[in-house]
View 1 (cartoon, rainbow, N blue to C red):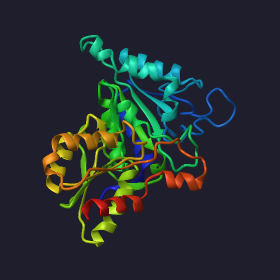
View 2 (view 1 turned 90 degrees about the vertical axis):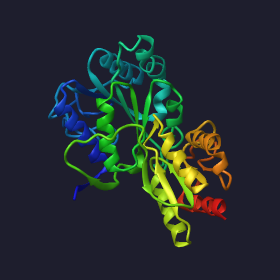
View 3 (view 1 turned 60 degrees about the vertical axis):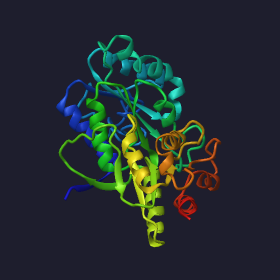
View 4 (view 1 turned 45 degrees about the horizontal axis):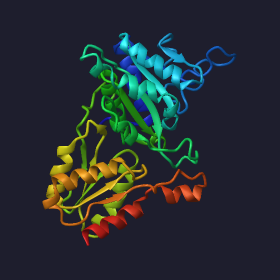
Length: 334
């Protein structure tokens, strides 16, 4: 049986093993060391969430604290990748992408295409996402849909410690730019993770639970809330099939389609706001490809189309929960 470690530890181990395997792998970002150039303990922090803690001592010179300029260090990571390195810059919160978006969507995402396949950009932008942390509207959004919309980027959203390690290793080994989203509420989650390195291929969704009555498509933290709702529905005699997308670009369309054709019902659960989001994209896919198989309207469970509230009471209402998901499942299967 594999050890049980946290989501945070799984990410740290993936970085450690890939840096040991390939000397081209470098890590950069704000406070990823925590103490460089200042009096006090070196390696004191390890990034905003402590993911890189302990790596500086092993890979001095390949773990780089940067100035507070996302435009600078994301641009540096993209440039290093084009020049032969495998860069892993840490964008502390995905909300900050506005400062460095040109470097990502107008440069890194287009190099392979614009240079006829001769340029590769193996850069992995690790970033945190999600509400529930009482961090207000500037630090709590889930913006994976924005990056999924951009051709040339690969978008990864792990839901478990096992997937966190395997998908990050795959991301570092991939030759294309990857945006790697880590939900803040999952960092302390424990799960079974093998000690040896392993990679999970992109574009292969995970069927977490099998069922014949309704398909739930979800990702990230919402997987666990959807699983709670499915347990409640199972006690009521309704069996849900749960699909964890893992990656939104590439997207495993076939697994979604096959499941919906079998169950005839679809509920898409995503923490992001609904307009032009992943939930809307999956709903449209089902309507286009599975219309004749549908026994009920496709439903989406998302946050409302508002900024994330700072008030704890309002934030808890804003984020989809298991009760809301279960209620929609009952409506779809009634």
